Amino acid sequence: LPRGDAFALLFEADRLEHKQWIRDQLDAGVTVVCDRYELSTIAYQATWHHDDSDVVRSEIGRKRSMLRRIQRQYYLPADMTFILNLPVEDALTRLQTTRQSLDVYETRHALESAAHFYKTCADSCSTHVYIDARQPPNAIAQAVERELGTLWAKW
Image 1 (cartoon, one colour):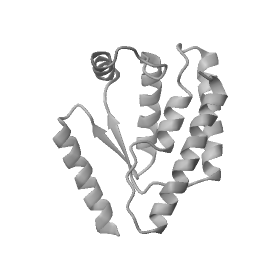
Image 2: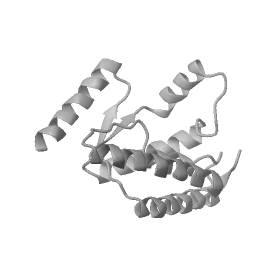
Image 3: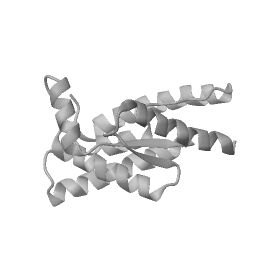
Image 4: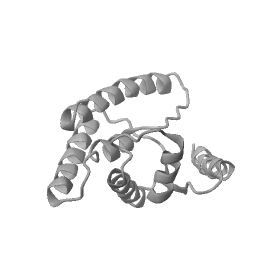
């Protein structure tokens, strides 16, 4: 398994291919809904480290900056991004009950780092909608539907 920048760049290459498909769909008048996009790449590709030292925090910041520079070259903004917030303890409990083993992105440190990144993004951008993922699935779906209704009413 590649580590560091190589792995992050492989994810970016996959996202670039996905963006071309999205662009083709949008050009054809299709509404596109994705379950992962630019923020998830940045949130997780820089967090596979297992500690919280100053060196690791510096590396996470460096890698996130690198990924943002790459993404700006192929910018395709989302009209709305839903961030489903689940406390790290709840996420770990769910993962441990549904998986036999966890991957490098499913450690406490990686999840805390990603959660902090998502929260910062949600607080800084009006197109990012933060939803409490502790709710039952139907309540989450209703919250998404409400937000989409608001977005579509503007069109």
